[in-house]
Image 1 (cartoon, helix red, strand yellow):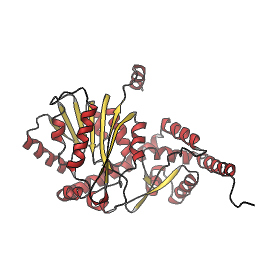
Image 2 (cartoon, one colour):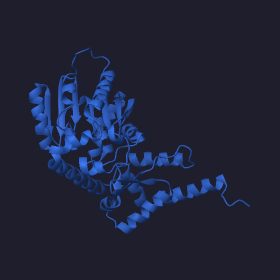
Image 3 (tube, helix red, strand yellow):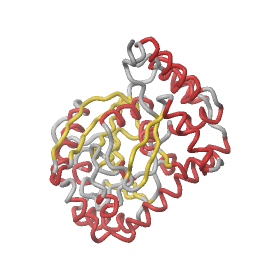
Image 4 (tube, one colour):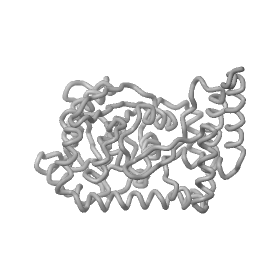
Length: 343
């Protein structure tokens, strides 16, 4: 007599665990929140206004049902939604559930608490850059040298704008988190107007010096948070996010906002770290996330209505790897544009 359950029994056990996990309104709301980002237990307690013991119980049930997974970032444990396995019996159900949750409006009170948690993360990030501005470039170059990934980002931009002639400048570009402004000259050479948004005045001051020294008269530096400040900016033809996403409190929300900022056919270029386990980067560079899985960026961009164009992967020093990705906003059908404008 076999001690192992038959495949059919395993499928039924998985289905039962899935249905149990999904059969609770609070757990469904937790899954909806996790569709925005990864969160720690205490953050989820604050967002859902529930005690830690209760939240830990719900997360355990969700994990047993295959709906969430744990992920270590530095010294903290974060929970995220688990991507549906393609070969799992519950895969189609899980995909349908996530799609339904993403389409449903969030509870206004929960949304307000979520915004509060993300604001706390943003404040921590601003404070770090204010304290460590003098050492930041040196520490970042220990992870990924700017010139290596910047060249590849330029190539992806050029291939996306295949209707632009050599030396010709067209359209508007937005760089989110330009830091000291090392990528602003390549953008200024390719676009008629360049906007650069950063939440740290100390970094913008350094970028301002670089812009003036290089005579970049088509670059405009803006102090503000992303994505909150996006509503005050014009629609653009390209958005660039160079080694910034792992500093942001909500990477998925940042990509959704970038997609909204793009004109139809516009391109988003991202360079960021691949997933790694080198926790010293958190203390040295203020990294909030230890890089991203390849599927993370594609999934978040896809939910934002962006289509993957190209992917490049670069080996860096000290065992790091950088992914350079370009995504394009597909031209919306006229009826869909009218519908979104009326929402």
